[in-house]
Length: 108
Length: 167
Image (cartoon, rainbow over all chains, first blue to last red; front, top):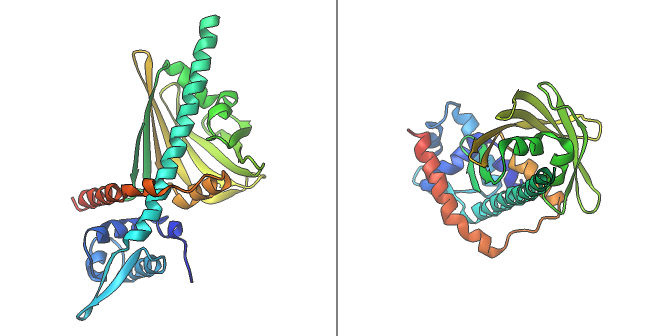
């Protein structure tokens, strides 16, 4: 099943996992130690992140290591930029409304 | 404008100073006829259907796209301290106010310094997916390649958050 990247990062635990594996490749056990949750729950999150191609797996000896998929992170970054722009625009508009309010007050 | 996204705590934090007295900024946030003038980023428009600005009250409104598509949302006021703070629970809904959960919690703070007012907005449990839908409705353009150059910055932020999380 093809998942959407925003669905993947809508969950706080998954976001925290992304932050962890952004720094270094980690095994599921090492990741699980950072959370107050079961190893199974972490595995499920890792599966979703893998399906979204946000993390990649690499077999090293007997262990599987997860690391961040850089290109997918660009999508998120792009998204955050859009979100920031919405707020900029909104506040720019509020500034204009306030200017009009000030003028009206001065005229009274 | 300061804009910080903390993925760890799922919080978006926005701070902006306005060259206007606090009473005026407060009115712009709490009176529907003023709010509708600026709340929706153009080319979208904001259309408030109901607004009872009191604790337990709500604002029921639509963000309307240039094509006329309406995206309804309800903001339930959970706490109001006149002129300095208010909070609401925000959720998308259908045109009959049936909420689409989960929603997010918004906290607005207003502080005055001289003739200027600083607004600080904190949004908890924000869903990127939800905002993505709003942007899709509004026909916002996808970012350019140039905007993608912030990857390094993003990764730095992520690593700082990891540092904080392990403290």
